[in-house]
Image 1 (cartoon, helix red, strand yellow):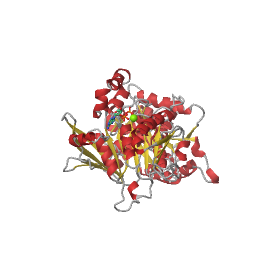
Image 2: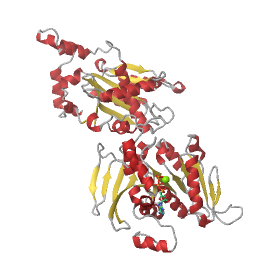
Image 3: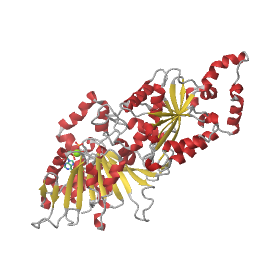
Length: 563
Ligand SMILES: Nc1ncnc2c1ncn2[C@@H]1O[C@H](COP(=O)(O)OP(=O)(O)OP(=O)(O)O)[C@@H](O)[C@H]1O
Ligand SMILES: [Mg+2]
């Protein structure tokens, strides 16, 4: 029976036949979208507590059970959660003659006594990192992951997804996913499904389509915000705006007509009348959070992905910490020239390299430039830095790097050797002094404290230029480690930890520099400016001609503040 479009009438008909029926609204939409086409390779449902996520995933599990070739995998956070899922499946799948084995869960279907010919659904949990590897090489046409944000990184998710494949066209491969905001993987889940383009700071186009949908596009992603209008049983009109996402990079090798999309259908407990009517205690539990934990309340009750419990830099505030350019904080060219400036970096090839340019102005760090990306050799970064610095008027005083950049593998030069080689090609007055940061015990905590210190500093806190998009994305999403409660979780998505690491090596160095050590030649000049009046020293005496600097900036036609 074709149930779409799914209305109150269709729902009643299913009811009369004694069949399971989806809830009106987002649950029905999600089941319809995922059940109907291979185009939707990955689908996330929910994003808040109680809309019927688990129920939707059990229902979607059912349509393939009659196919004896079907192999499914259900992953949940821990054994206890899996047992709950198991019990619900056992009940829901009775009509399919399900046989359940526990610990780990295996559901077998079919009548043959050996149970060798029917569909099989396996269960597992995500408790340790080893669990990601054990499914590799196996083949499941559907993988169900509940609480997707428990997976620390996108890389591990993709490893699991590599087992999602099928040789039977009718059993097209799909990832059936549910999640609540929060958890160690919140950052990557949000970016992959909820907000694939940063609408505040990203560089994108926006098109309003004739049907009212909105298309956002940047160089990597096409993101449709689609409108689904529906009616509750009481005839109240509602709107669900869901995401359809096309990833240009991930589809680069796809044959025409075989491109895959991912979707996110958001829903809250308001979309589940069964709970709101029959289980006031559940809704009260959610409402009760309002008084005890506002962030968790917003996340679980309203599906708000911008706040959540467990984040480390809760003081990070876009309005306070982000600026467009130096004009926003009234910095003059001269002040910029006179400021101590540092580059700090974290190196990675498969992971990301993250490089930050920070000026110390009025005692607070202002980060004005970011270089970021992976799959580039250290020598290539060295060349990029060389070109950037050689073309620019700015003089960087110190270059801060972590000591693991000195590791030379297999007798090759180390990343920092390769970079220094390029730095040494700069004119001597443009060469920063190289400073290594040790990783002795506790250094992570020191960096964390330095970051807190500068974010909270009064009256002037740290500032970050809006164009440092990776750092801005990372900071509010870093979470605490579940075991080492005080520390940032380093298993999180490296798209988050790499920018933070690169930036915070610099902050730590600034925070730790000893009194007197940091005497910068232009600072000395700044102090002697008084003497200029008396004819003692001029900028020219130390090789800097401010008029010339300004002239060059004007000639370039650009505003130095947006360099
Ligand atoms: N289509 C449906 N038909 C009947 N009952 C449903 C349906 N969808 C959800 N429910 C009921 O609503 C309740 C909540 O559903 P479910 O457990 O799937 O929500 P959830 O979003 O997974 O919640 P949580 O965030 O707590 O994990 C359950 O009692 C479930 O049986
Ligand atoms: Mg659930």
